[in-house]
Every structure is written in structure tokens, then in C-alpha cells.
Image (cartoon, rainbow, N blue to C red; front, side):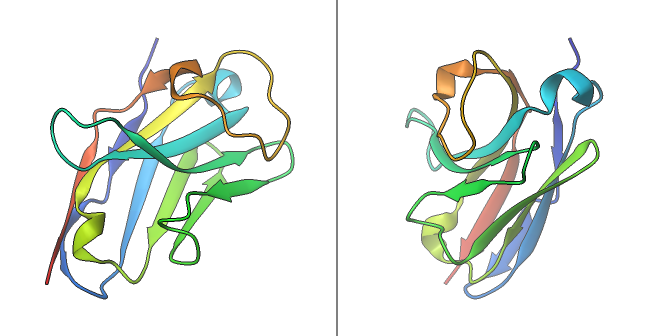
Length: 127
């Protein structure tokens, strides 16, 4: 099973922007619902920050990123546009796909239902 591959992380100053990408090679199986998670420090739990349903494009966001981040899906590539970055957004960002079970558009899948994970891409925001 091929895993998603993220790219686009980097270091920016407060207020800056980045665009993360995630390519999935087997998207016909993985594309039902995809999401972005982040882990702000080793040992901490991953936070689901955005997810999107391919069937109708319905997207949902965590309160912490609502209005600043935008998730989108184009073919086999998942994107996350990060605007208005803050030091608190510093984290390893992970792409997740291949949701087990069925969810209605707008539902938030459990982290454990995502079966395919990327290796992560680091985002660092300096003051």
C-alpha cells in the first residue's frame, strides 16, 4: 500500500503563508475523505485540523485554524493553504487518507479510521 507523500513545509515569520501538498498514488481507493493533522511536539497527540470529502467538496476545520487555513483536493493531490501563520502553528503536519467505514459529508472521521499516513512535513513559524 503506497503511502501519501507530503511536501511544502518550511520556515516563515509570523503572518506568512505556506502551501502544503500531499500526493496519493492510489487515490481511487484513498480519496473518499482526506485530512490534515498536526503534532506540535513529540509525544503530543495529533490534532485533526481539516478534512474534505471528495463527493461534494465539503470541508471542515478545527477552531484553531478556521478562517486561516484552506483545504482543497485536485485529482490525486490534497492541498492545505496556510495563511496568517502564528508561532503556535509550528508543528509537523501530516496528510491522512483511506478512511475506514462510512461517514457523511461534514462528519469528522476519527484519527484511528485513517489508514494511510504520510511521513509529515515540518512547519516552523518564528515571531
